[in-house]
Image (tube, rainbow, N blue to C red; front, side, top):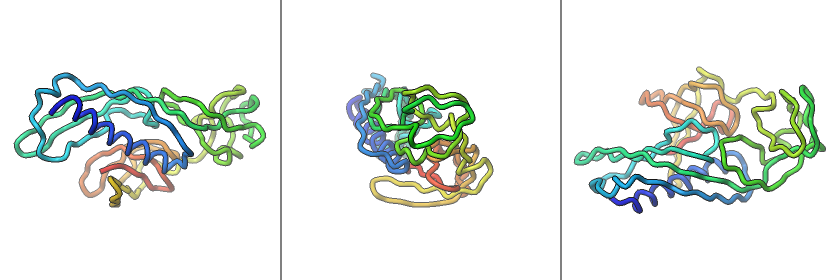
Length: 216
């Protein structure tokens, strides 16, 4: 193996993860900028005969900011694991407040606007004004602030203990199975879900009522 080959594998997986997240959350056009740090020890690892397994090692709701990924080889001849770091930013149109909104107030379309921003940390956001309209604020929100769903009251689409449908995708292939939610989650949030068939716990993105998406 080499640092470069591992970096390319991680980049491909990250771009797929971001594209899936964008599709689930109905983003418009976006631009991502990221750097991947791979330990020099990667140059001394044996070549993996099977496909590398790349998984998240953080619990961020949005794949932006400082991200940790585990890269492992699980073939019969080689069994190794390496941790890599991704520093990512994202530029796209998001919903921001046109005016200040008081606590316990209902959000109106007139108090919001779309504005292009660059995000470099794990903060949730809206990309459509209609998604936030009618929700109620938990505290005062200042003018010009990116509207974070966590600042608004909305019922979760998935509740802890619920049976959920897990939809897994990779390179155009899709498969589904059933699982159990281990956390509450609103649309676009990443939560832990236990696969009912394998017992394995995976991170998945809430995409609908008792429905989550993940990657193979």
